[in-house]
Length: 194
Image (cartoon, rainbow, N blue to C red):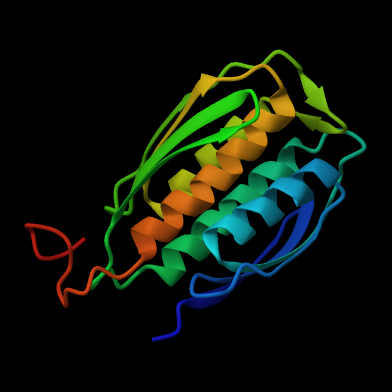
């Protein structure tokens, strides 16, 4: 079964086409008007070994909030579509990674229920046109639309660029682990379904 999908989202504020292949090789083509977001989404794809293509436009002159949140919605929907059949997956993912001064922990459960916890503080308020608090909005939208439990913790770090990039890399690695196959032919739940 191919685990790939295309999500289209067009609103009065955004226009997004997103393609995701969970079983890819880390290739990405990201085109949004938020350069730092392009950078960290490419890191997510590379470290998770996902193929990801995003072409997104939106009103970033006013504020890139809607575009960043809507991309989170689309990526969450794509993850859900690609992992609907939970048969044989590991389900859980966990990683701690360092990036220079930053150290981040991400844990997640593809268990079909949404819960999101984000324990991250930052010193810099902006990286180019990316307000650092938008990372939380992005991942909240993603978790809500992927129906996953997602916990993101900053263990250490001063440089906001390093912290956010470490979060995206960690999320990619943890998601790759959770979506990987366990070698069993059953749904990983005592209920028999997720």
